[in-house]
Length: 249
Image (cartoon, rainbow, N blue to C red):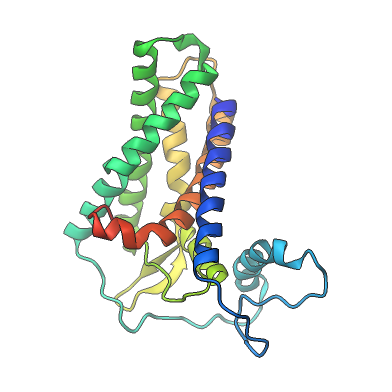
């Protein structure tokens, strides 16, 4: 179970890295030395560019938590809260879209190659079990997020960054993974549904996995699923224009 999750996360990170590098090459712009962008990290170290995304995200997440000053409530001036019908459509599309089902198919194939869990053995029947398991976990993940979001009246839809530079877009995607929109003005708040949902899907696996798997295994799987979620959000940031054209987002 852990080996399959590690392999899946590694492949996802590789895919996201390729997307970011491609987008960076396509949208490369000369640097403005006078820029006051939040995402500009000043350092004389030659390793600074490599750690810039990590330091940026760390700063974006920890600064509001450690600061003693009250945080300004930032609203989106052009935000329009989606209707219940649109939120429900988003849940079904995010959970059962062709892109998601393809991802599940590859993930099940990885589990099949790693023979996880070994009790399910090999063969097409075993692959069917693994695919059904991944689909069930994804369904539980989506239901958990949708139910919590509706209960807390949060908008968990993804809104692409209006910025153009590569690292601000990556930072926006990472931040959006653990934040949501609230109220009629769409101000940004911590997303409990977004953080809890991966663990809801992981713990649902215990309903059909062999008895030797317990809460510790489910919690570890939830950690990997949350990591996958960060990668998926970054990919979504750069693929959103394409997905809109084919009506998949």
